[in-house]
Image (cartoon, rainbow, N blue to C red; front, side):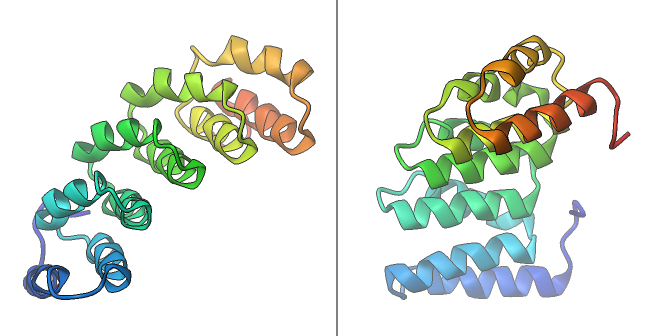
Length: 169
């Protein structure tokens, strides 16, 4: 994302923001998603605020919008979302952190390797591979032999290769 938003991005962001208070919860979720897709950095405060909503649907869309913005200022909110009670919100936050490539997320992602939910755990493995987490390497090597889920074992193998400078370098 460019640090400077175009006039159209700013105009569209302003219009979308004006609709947030007037529309239903369902429409607000789509507006939040659109704010992320537009990519105007001035939408970040509203999306960050929405990431703390009591409504889980709004939180889910806000976390996804933070991923779309690809703004490093969202790292703390995404890390916080890793503790959400909803597994799909945690999974969305994990995916976003993997793409933002910030080592600050490394330890929280390593902690998710113990999560009960297969989606959360598998996405944590993938994100740690993208981060080339040398801290996660010994844990992943151990998990390669103990993980009961075949697909997660495959993701573990790919993550290990990535960390060691393998297939995607």
